[in-house]
Length: 317
Image (cartoon, rainbow, N blue to C red; front, top):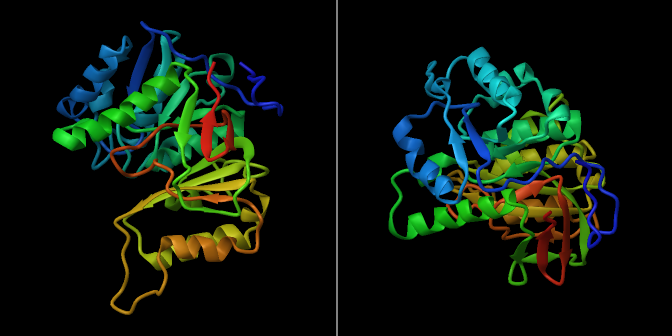
């Protein structure tokens, strides 16, 4: 559907898939690394407790080297689920690496006739970008089933919060994230649609058919297990290619397990981002609770969003 909310007065020309209701089916996909039945069981039970049906195709457990089947097998499973009229959302089981190898085999045109929510993050940034660029469809940056496996105590509570935010987002509830205590620069209210995802993966798809549209958008970035100079190099790419100059705002999620050399680079990821954005007047909001940590709150990409008085809100039904 084409969505326009009265509380978000600008016109948003984006295909937003129908929100889910109890009894709707979520199918699991593996666009990158392989998975086992045991690794998805806790997450499946969680979503079933919310009233959703979970479709697990036998091909989900294919294995080819580190991948969940070879490139053609992973694309065909995705397409099979896109063709299934009962499936209302496709939820990727894990990241790793491999989505960029099979994305061109996905029949995205099927989503024009029957839009479905595409859910995942990290390596799934490829899917988010491709859906935005090629068909202008909203997608869901959110946690994946692998993150609930073998969690207990506080870790289970955190990943359950992430699952709960995904449930609310898929159900069409308005999402409100309080960022009043977050580190903010050039602060002012703004509104628009969010694109982006994992910074390293985002850089890898620039100039391809999977690059999202940066023009007049709110960019979200996060990353994991990178050297500071890698972050600097990637931010330089976004700046020198003119993509930063097109933004409405920048949202910065978690950057965890960062590395430095024995001879220090001299700046951390936050300082690097500030340096490369200092010539632009768009707001920068750090500490967005999304990315490679257990409290990975859902961010609907392409859905009308606004930042007002320190609250980031995503429209619902």
